[in-house]
Length: 116
Image (cartoon, rainbow, N blue to C red; front, side):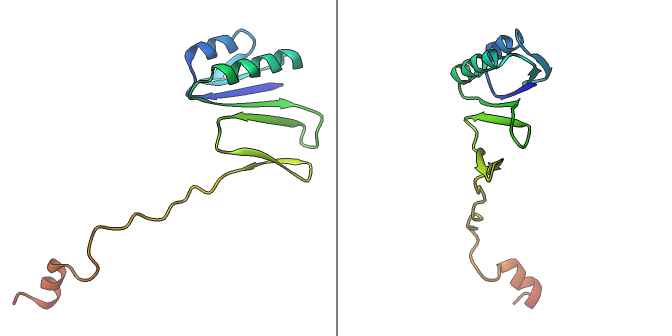
């Protein structure tokens, strides 16, 4: 079994994959091509993906029963003691500094202490 997931790829690439695989949802292709055809398809995907991203999952003789390859993803597969795991980079950013000055605003001072 082979699964290819495309994100933001050219329509022509989707048409190329439909010759060999079944598109079950937008950008999700499944099928059972031979290993040679799968490798040729993956080479075509990597060549024609443009600004898009691609993910290939296929059965293999591993502990998990499958393996996968990525193209232009920020998440990368890493091997951890024989298991393939996904490394997701830390994308949290510090909160943007507020443009407000520290301390009490004029409106809050008037509410709390009354008009003077």
